[in-house]
Length: 185
Image 1 (tube, one colour):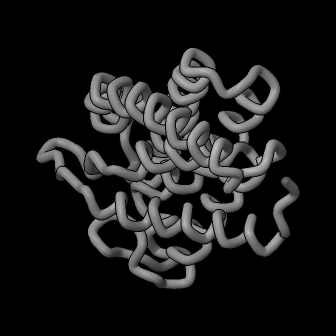
Image 2 (image 1 turned 135 degrees about the vertical axis):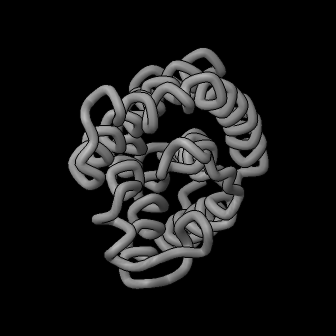
C-alpha cells in the first residue's frame, strides 16, 4: 500500500511530538550540567518505528521547533540559546544519530538484533557529539567532560537502547501489519 506524502509528514510530526513529550522526563544529576532525559529513548524509538527518512525528519522538526523557542527540550526549555549551551551538542547530535541508526536498519533490516545494535550505535554518536560540545561550551577538560557527559549515561543508555529497539520493532511490525506504515518507511 503506497502512502501519501501527507501521511508520512503526519507520522513525522507525531514522532516529533513524542520526542518533545518524552524530553520532559528528566532526572537532574548534581555533578553534571547534563540531565538524564527521555529524549534519547524517544529518538531510538521513533527511528526504529519510522525508519531513516521519516525518523530523521521527526528529529529535524523537533530540533527546529526547539531552536525557534517552542518549549520542547528537557525542562520545557527552548530557544537557540539551549543549542549553544552545554547540552546543545547532544540535541544537535540527535540528527546524525537518527540518520546513522536509520541507515543501518534500512540496509540490514528491522530485526530486534539490528535495532539493538543501531540504538547502541546511536547512543555512542549522541554521547560523542554531546561530550565534544560540553567540553567546549562549559570549558571543561576532556576528563571532566567525560565524567559529566558520558560515564553516568552508559548504563541507563544501554537499557534505553534495548527498550527502544524492542518496543520500536514491535510497534513497527504492528503498523506494517495494519498497513499504516509502508515498506519504504
